[in-house]
Length: 184
Ligand SMILES: Cc1cc2nc3c(=O)[nH]c(=O)nc-3n(C[C@H](O)[C@H](O)[C@H](O)COP(=O)(O)O)c2cc1C
Image 1: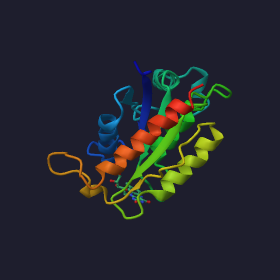
Image 2: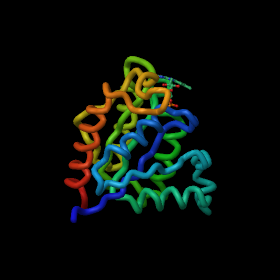
Image 3: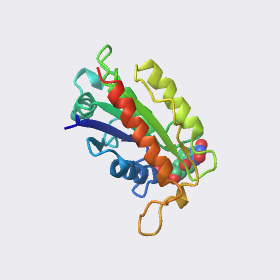
Image 4: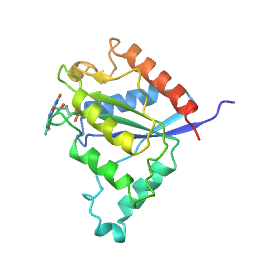
């Protein structure tokens, strides 16, 4: 039987009808059966403040445990003002502390950015990769995933467009290989 992997999926949007969340859920469906993708919620994390981290809030503790207990991390994010949404950067900061005990360290990762615009969130994707280099997250280089035209990805019944399905399938299959290859 193949080894099971649990993947923490961090979605950089809190919007109910988020295109990014829909893509994250679609990836969970497309993933090989031994890969369990679970969205880790980030909306309850207080803005990171070293003062409150002396006695960490329950939400910080839970989030850090969820990342630590996963075998890998996958980021699915929109672009805000050509960068990473604040809510996602906050989650990254929370997971990175206390100093020397980062939950992210060594977790194989990948980034997929999704936007209604034509550029597909390239700016957010690469700003995020900059943080992941520092956090020692081995981040899949190829295939790069800048998904534009997000409003056309799903039909009125929430069905994934056949135009994008093959690419998402390739992305998640390559990511599964990446995760297996980078387990410690
Ligand atoms: C504050 C803000 C800044 C934005 N900046 C960008 C941007 O730089 N590039 C872009 O492609 N879309 C930008 N957008 C549009 C988002 O891509 C769009 O709202 C998208 O649907 C958000 O992702 P979601 O559907 O997963 O919530 C911005 C939206 C907001 C609210």
